Image (cartoon, rainbow, N blue to C red):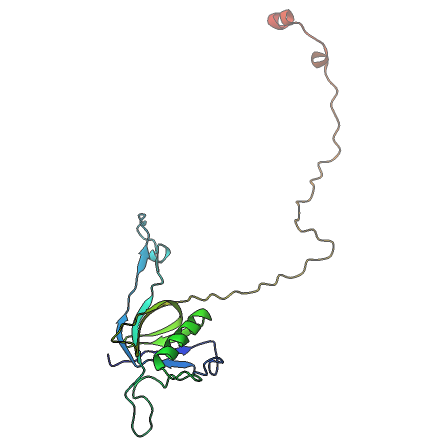
Length: 205
């Protein structure tokens, strides 16, 4: 594949304090890119006329890259630098495959957020999610790894300041009491005060 993936760190600056690598990781080759998307849609019926934005969302799916870093890359004879990728040297370690794999592990363990430039799209706010590397007897001097990266969603919060309450104001304001005037009990009538028997009630007395 002609296109080389470039991973740029977004929220770090300068070089890696451990390996001294620049803040751009350029692999020798990317032999496979797997781009995918997935829309999660509700399984319940949606009422006609309603916005589907309330019933579906774009799920976070990983970007998968299969990358290669060789210990003996093709170099420019005039400059001595690799024609593809980067130097991939760190301290006393000269094997480019070892340095590249350790750099990937360090970035994954430090939860770095970065951008990924691929042949089809520029992905922003990505993190390492998964990775694997396999070496065989005929590929001991080559790093051939598969890495998965997933986008991170950021949200912003706002601080709302309410105006101060007035003096002697309670937290909850109750309704003012209603003034119904002076209330006096009425005197009972003779009919109300005189006890009656059940027989008197039947005949109407």
